[in-house]
Length: 497
Ligand SMILES: *Cc1c(COP(=O)(O)O)cnc(C)c1O
Image 1 (cartoon, rainbow, N blue to C red):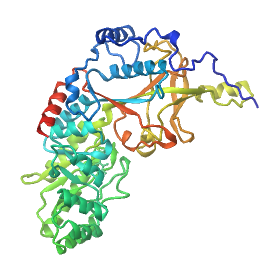
Image 2 (cartoon, helix red, strand yellow; image 1 turned 135 degrees about the horizontal axis):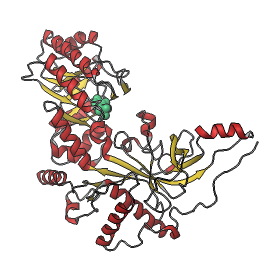
Image 3 (cartoon, rainbow, N blue to C red; image 1 turned 90 degrees about the vertical axis):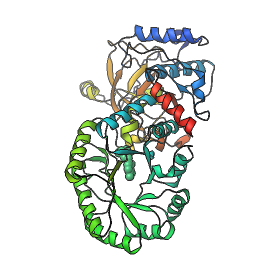
């Protein structure tokens, strides 16, 4: 059995070799020189995936950073520019032998969150979004959405405190959308004035009657979640058959039930699930009337995907028109999470190690066969499934790496031959595989950077520090055109608060 490392030996040890430093500038003292440099990079490397010749230079005005002095600075410019700036900063830090110089980092484009909100208003004008905080409780995202007037779906006392700690958000803008809450959390909600909360079982009614009798209750019903990546019906939702009993119990306990909620499942790829769910909600409204309640709230939950949003919105609107033709006096809300943030975050990771898999095939012919499909090189990057890529395990995502920098340059020639590789996280656990099969340039080396887009949903929030690896930090930008709307909204919100 042979165990041969097939990698060429010319692998730089530091992640940017000083001799190949023809693209990373050494001095950044002069903002204009730097901006010119970025523009040059952009125009000189048309084959790089992230390049767009319309990208303006990053420009940052210090006064805007003071909008929220306790938060990281708010930059301007296209996120691709900030991915590059972060990589160049890392190169400088590495040259100065700073610890953790090559740390992975996110770039969050708040203008993307803004655009998602515009899309929501355009496609679902009659449905008020309550952002699901668990999806990404980022302090800027929450402030921006608060500025834009959304409500918030919180599932714990911690999330409620985080939202209420922000000046300018009233408790009436929160729905406590966890149907199974600890009694102390219900009491905590009562204390801070969060009245709207969901339930799906009789014990919950007893808890609420005891510690928060003025609560405005929303009955979470079970719907068909079989078309979702993350099926929530396994855990939550009252089957329709149990609804009359639950409502009778609520009456007996003199509780105020104001409406119905559902969640078709997170990552719902079949828009028709919403039509079926709205139909069930209609039946539940009718049962409410029979029990003597006049419901005035319909909460259509989360599960909205950016990819099929227009279609989902149209299915949902049609179902609302069909089953709730006269919506006078009925407030329709939703709890989107993923929809708002998924596309807004990109992650830059550094290749910290690389090796060839053990080659135990003696026979050259079968080796050639295996080579065609089997990853030939394993890359180890500095974020993994215990960190940002927990979305692979918990959120059933697949991620797609692309090359951000190659051999100290942002220029990735399109002629670069590709080979099949695998990408792994930094921990000592073999479950920490980010990408089992990826086609990447064969000249990738230790020190090069890989990027991942669509990293905003269910990533940072559930990242751990397992094995002593820090959670990747976030760089914020208001986007390509400077994000005037985003800045104006944040400034107005800060002034109000
Ligand atoms: C997770 C969750 C959401 C958000 O789901 P998305 O698929 O991210 O839109 C909304 N409501 C409840 C109750 C949830 O548990």
